[in-house]
Image (cartoon, rainbow, N blue to C red; front, side, top):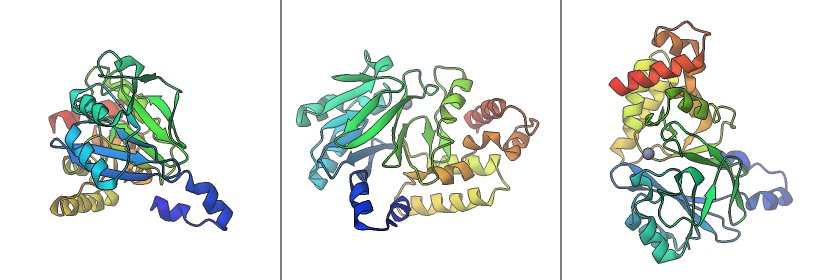
Length: 276
Ligand SMILES: [Zn+2]
């Protein structure tokens, strides 16, 4: 959908101007439920892997596409996001960019990044957000011009990460950063938990017709061996119960007063999901 929206340029000059911001993206499964991603700038041929959960699928995707890996952008230090880095770096010579707060725990780091830093993959430019909550060192890469955000284990399709080493309020603060992004922003998350997340979304937000439609879509995707990644931010705002902590229906679902503090709604939803 994003491509279609951007395809309505009025003349050749506009199309030319936008071409540099149009990445090529390839997603594939790693391990059991990690999502591997390659993003490539067609203008320069630069290409980044977002995390390396496992070397083999990343190297296979590079061989399939013929793309040359120049960069590895790490979202956080958990083993299922970094284990393949040494092998892929040996094979490609890619530069490894990792959160400064995770630098001691990520292998082969060349560049560290913090809140407000900019990362370049050829002509593609990403802003770095520190998005703690799932873990303290987590960062998100937002390619604003390209309309793409790599959310790692912070925001999932229809869900959010588990809170592992911060108060849950910290994760809510991180999730609020996604709320103002344009509807057509493509959200790439680090795992495919779509079906389980859809079941919880339906329990937490049962009167939301959009959630029921999304549940059907998730079941169809499973039957066809696909995953619903990326998701569009506009769809997430309409269906993801955690992003909808500001909505009266979600407050009522956790027995809180509508119009109150969305942080409390989020904390209650996250605790419910842990038991779900
Ligand atoms: Zn993780």
